[in-house]
Image 1 (cartoon, rainbow, N blue to C red):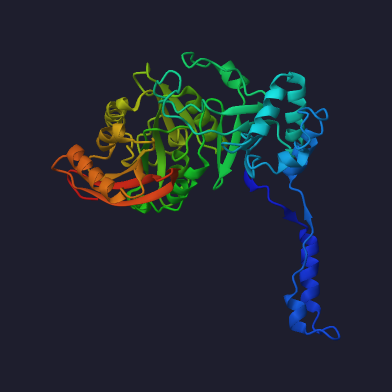
Image 2: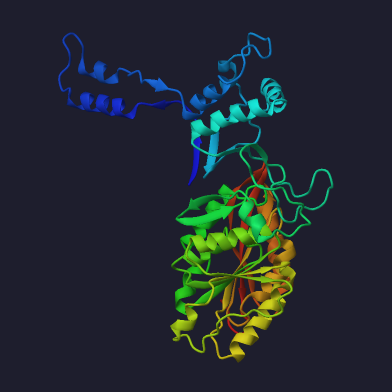
Length: 441
């Protein structure tokens, strides 16, 4: 369950409905008053505190009186504090507060006081969690592109700035340690369902962006250029060079217009690979994981498209747990293996390059894995300044022309805003059409 709610004051809906009914059925004006003046009269709506206010008040009541010896600091002062969150998101069973929550001086004094007493700290946040009917609480934070202390590139996009408040989030393992099956099972996992698609992840090891739903919806509705041509070509495949927990790959498989029956994905984070595997299972799809040390991909190879018995055993998602720089080599070897074995090779018509702030490092690979004869589309995710969209469009056009070579036609056929990334910066997706070497798309 994913819920994003403002905790503004709510109203008694039953009372409002009864007032509306009474207003509609009162056809006659009261003596001495016009019907117009009665209908225009503003009704006072009864208000009640939000669930979060109630939960927070319950938590504040667990504290000893006058802990700061400052009369002005009361329960109402904390509730009305500008950094007391006015919204929250629930990824069951986790409640996630927005960045900057509880950051005022008075909140920081309270949090420092709670940190000094583990039992009291647990009682306080437990009261909030119980009031909100969740088991875990945390404060969200942006995913840094580099570690603030080591300055090393956070290429796995680990949520290293997430601030847990309550609940056991699983063992904190060093990045150098490859997690075992036991580590995965001991970790804390949350889930969300967007557009009917199930996704799951371990929040201290894997990021999740709710804002990406714009691009997910575009895929599901077949609004990507060329995606609605899938049924004309038979079964097709897509490549996701940064598959993560399946943000976009799952949408390709579910989009009816696309007729994508296979996704080849690449991912370097073992936690994202595990999340994608679990998410695929939750959606009823088969998933195969191939480590970098595996030189061959073993899977059923039907000799014709009519042999459904073997086809039904094939995985819809194949994840290569390795750097995507090996993708072109892998795809070439797979294509040869399938065709030499008399199997049906699904042409790769779409390549997703979903890395921010830039996916440029994967563009050459994306061009190489597209179907050589039919061509297809690359969907490149980029950060762009609000006043630099047209400039970047020209840069993307020239870059892909150089990568595709003179015997393939390239056109940036569109671009869409996914969400805001930072003040003055947008998360943008460019749709690049690349023709086949023998026929144009």
